[in-house]
Length: 285
Ligand code: PMP
Image (cartoon, rainbow, N blue to C red; front, side, top):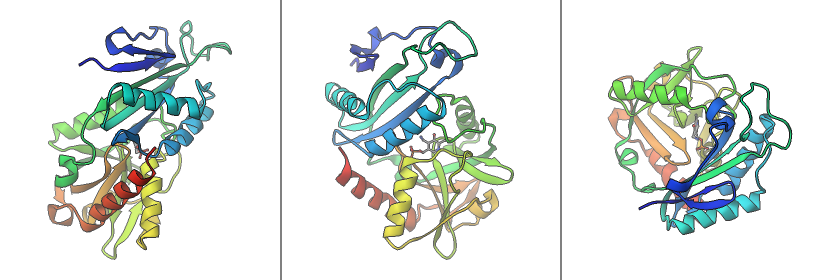
């Protein structure tokens, strides 16, 4: 069945949606995006995604295409029109269409706004039950990973490298330390049950799920340390897991072929997943 998508003010069948070939998102990856999970037809942590969108737009001096309230209304309308019960909604803002030039186009160029939905199970996922196998790859992305840009070629290459090595995902390593997963934040649990994840900086995306999970972990009395860790430390850890808006909390059971936590999803990851889902559903809008 054809989806209804949103392009620059219009709701259209996906086959009729059009973006200019001069769009700077297409030519320069000059754009940012957000992915919000949908459960029971409701949006998970929409305000968190809006806060990060505003920051990404600001860092790149991109014009905002709409207010938070307007964007919320479009999200809701698209979820309703496509009758999405569970899945995700993708939103992309680019600098718009202009003659190809490295310099930004003149003021007044209208940003492009595109949204589409993808229905899929998010609460019950095979990878959450089974746990992920990850492999390490060098982090070869640009240095502003805190901005959620649409330039996802290297994460895509990293994911293909993982597949080639018969794993599910890649953890990227820079200067000997794990930065993050190809599309998620990375964590380990130490022998004395401390949850460790890299501190926020320009080296990683400031995950919306990361912020929520660390808050819930602290509220539940779990100890959290924000510092970098190596692949060797991760391999020897009690548990490992990742977080993202679409994977929530998902256990990691193998790193570069070494089993973590006996090759089974661990209790900390499972508990955090349960808490995250319960809390997020309560706040979903
Ligand atoms: N890091 C990267 C590189 C990502 O692409 C994502 C997914 N957007 C995340 C972390 C997790 O962020 P969030 O929890 O906001 O989805």
